[in-house]
Image (cartoon, rainbow, N blue to C red; front, side):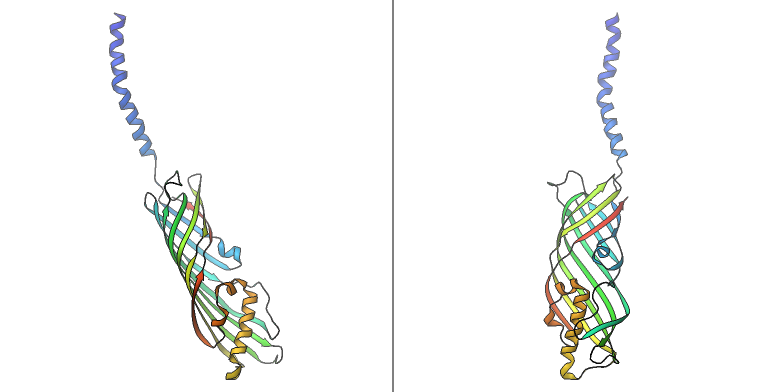
Length: 253
């Protein structure tokens, strides 16, 4: 009789074991809440000596693909030398600018155990930097005449980037663009605003001297702009190689 009593118990155990396993898997599925969004802040300009407030947003659009956009204000810092053999910067009247960048990321399945936005990724990207800078210059040979120069610089970049994004405690992110070569255009427009304007034959030399001050004060500019393209009054456009590297921190939700 005892053996017969065990039959219903065994039947219930066998019957409900698969169901119980299915329920547990279903429960796990319902417990998993995909966090498809990341809000982040770009630390890179601060590291390079810029003044900035650039924020970003990344959205998971497929299991291993995301779209992201960065935008915000960006201006040149005040550090660096302010003079050369001919001129010195006496004051900065204004310094402002902005930045926007977009990319579409492919997170590599073979390299990443977790789904996007975690792990190694490659992405085509586009970015635009805009700087507007107005400085007052003074010649050592003629210190009573102040020359004001408006310098406007636009940098357009189209390229491909390689990066890695860490996920910390499922909420916090550290995003690093490790390498981002690009084909870029550099539009620099330097014009006289007020004050002494050199004769036509001396404009090139004057702008070259002022350009050298800017390159000394902002060394990164020299690596981006072909010097031979901005020795003249007015706007000049140059296409060449560029780069992108980024460090961002974010919050995932």
